[in-house]
Image (cartoon, rainbow, N blue to C red; front, top):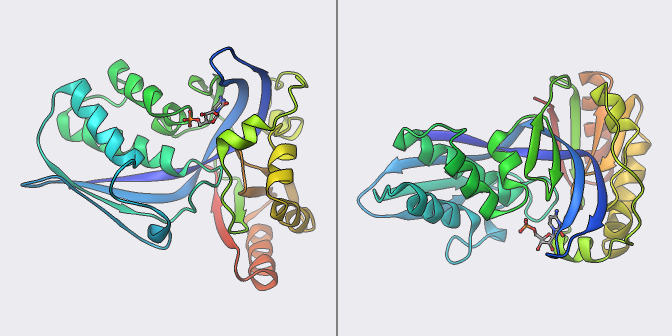
Amino acid sequence: MIHEVARAKLNLALHVRHRRPDGYHALETLFAFVEDGDRLTVADAEADSFVITGPFAGTLQAEGDNLVTRARDRFRLAFGDDRPCAILLDKRLPVASGIGGGSADAAATLRALATRAGVRHDDPDLLACADALGSDVPACLLSRTAIGRGRGEDLVPVDGLTGIPALLVNPGVGVSTAAVFGSWDGVDRGPIGSGDLLEVACSGRNDLEPPARSLAPAIDAVLALLEHQPRTRLVRMSGSGATCFALFEDAPACAAAAEAIRSAEPDWWCLETALI
Ligand code: C5P
């Protein structure tokens, strides 16, 4: 049995530079990952199966067009490994929420199947599988802090943010990534900086925040509540939303904010974690 954690992804900064002729947008983004995520296990079996459990299982279909089964099928095609397997996904992260979700699950599937087949996780054919599954899947395959360019798949790993306490908050609304990108105003506000990573993050932006806020006004309330918390270093929306995050000066400040937000908004999803 192979276990993988499909860690939540954060875009500490996300600068949209231009719309490309292929319909995708050219980005510059600072990806970071947190300790927590969905859990995925792969086991040898007589026949293929895929089961989803966990708090967010109800929002997903195990049959049909799931990124996990697409990742499994693509791995098989690429590596010719036809052995059946039982895949179990413990879905702990909210779906369609800007923190990787399905992309992280697809990447975890690729890593687990690669381990089972004796394929290295940095195998170029595995990376090609990730790239074909979605723009965030290569970053999730790497699952570490990195600068992403292109659609987000052109990655340079960077160091320096490990252990920073982070609080992730989602108001229970899903947002369509394509719709948010489609509502971007087309203005290039410049590249992300270089140097100290926290400074790069803090001096950056998420250019998808304004379009996401107009499509999902609940994001305004999440950002306002996070900004209201003491001892934050950065408050921002991740990806195309609606999950927002705050980075804190220390773990007690993060824990206090989590408690305050849970009591003010008991229906919101709130994850107290740390950057890896
Ligand atoms: O690559 P992925 O399938 O995850 O992207 C979902 C949608 O998000 C795309 O169809 C596209 O509309 C939009 N997108 C984009 N530019 C990116 C990444 C995603 O326009 N760099």
